[in-house]
Amino acid sequence: MALSRTEEWAKAKEFVTEHADELRELDSPSALFKYCEKKRHGGKSLWPKVRTELRKQLSIDLDQMRADAAQALADKARHLSDSAADAPTVELYTSGELIEKPSRDDEDDIEIVPVFAIADAGGNPVWFNSVHPKDREKITDELAVATDAARKAVWLAGQVRDNQGLEMVRVVIHHNHPGLDADAITRSGVKHLVAVTLSHVDDPADNPATAICLDAHGYRDWHEHRLSDLLSTPAPTGR
Image (cartoon, rainbow, N blue to C red; front, side, top):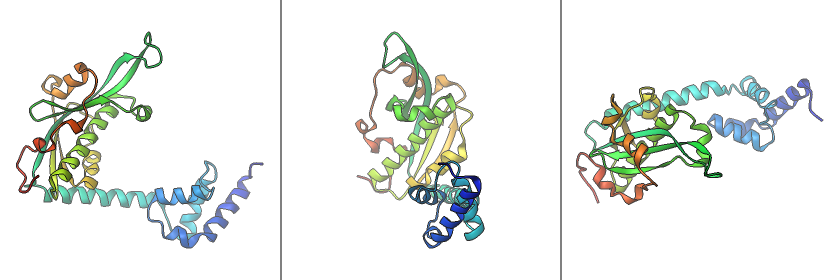
């Protein structure tokens, strides 16, 4: 039988009190939620009350934790950008498009499939494919698929850095979607030690990745490309 609101508040209060020591040791909203969910206190109705009790009893404010984490990440991204001014550079073109393709379930039906492409500085294809089916529910418009392509380019630059044994790299991403969130893309480079610069291409015809998205058949895996070739400026040490 479902608990009343009063019973849920009492349950949330008791839970936070009982597990206070463990909860204080968790340092992120996701870690807190996972812990509460594991203890069966992460339900849609109960979780907001647990959040409130965390704030009241333990002064743990999840919204403030998120804001602090976002600010810390932004600071790291700025520091990385300043430090990487003379770092080896990877230059890439990216594009994400929504393409009509025959349905996987019925060849007579058409489905809209998000596809991405990444090309090197010379316009040669490096990596292109359809977005993985498990990710398609959250990639349903042109901005989302363009963002996905840019994030993949950041990740790929991180692979170049790791492959070449570099402390950090810069990546210049040429793209043609004006709505990309530059700050979010820049922050995504922090964990890969990649400083990000976005360069908007006004005419899609000047972006070779767009033609690859629209015209290429099948797919190309980034493993097929020699990663050292993606460095536009030489690395002081390489393999």
